[in-house]
Image (cartoon, rainbow, N blue to C red; front, side, top):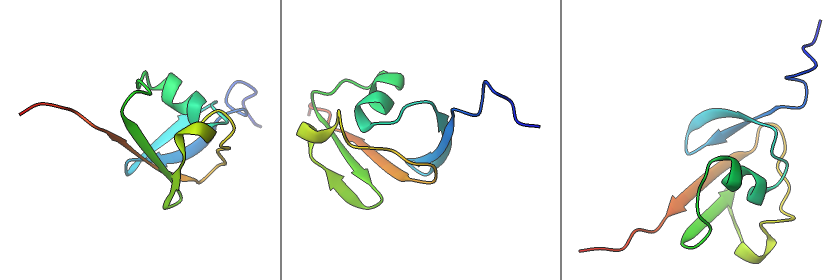
Length: 74
């Protein structure tokens, strides 16, 4: 018997770790992880996702996501 609360969740691999989310776009995932969009790069299944497409870039169960935050400093 499926759990209706969890049926909307998909499982991704985010930076090598299994992660369940209800997000269906790259932007939704970043927002759910509280990652600022300023200096971030995202790969979905080993392809760079252009920042301009984050709101529409779809996520699917089993996707592998790599998120890189650029940090300034010396």
